[in-house]
Length: 105
Image 1 (cartoon, rainbow, N blue to C red):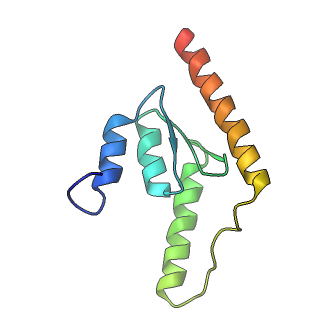
Image 2 (image 1 turned 60 degrees about the horizontal axis):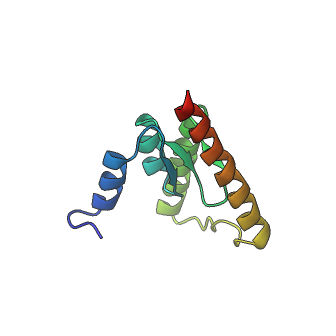
């Protein structure tokens, strides 16, 4: 629990996440901020947010926000399935191993 304003928890995460850390979030702006600090970031299905992909993810989020503000029904993500869990665990393990290799150097 973090007291304060609406984004206080995000701010705390950003302040404490950096090189050698792995952040799991579906919050694209939070992902962008953590990437800026050098953290590895992935979503809950194991898809990585990278320097190359974050701009597109932010633009898509903004577009969807605008469509919803105009009354469009945009739906949401597909239901989480067991294959998603398996993929997430595999990619999390890969991210952990990658961070370990980088820190051994």
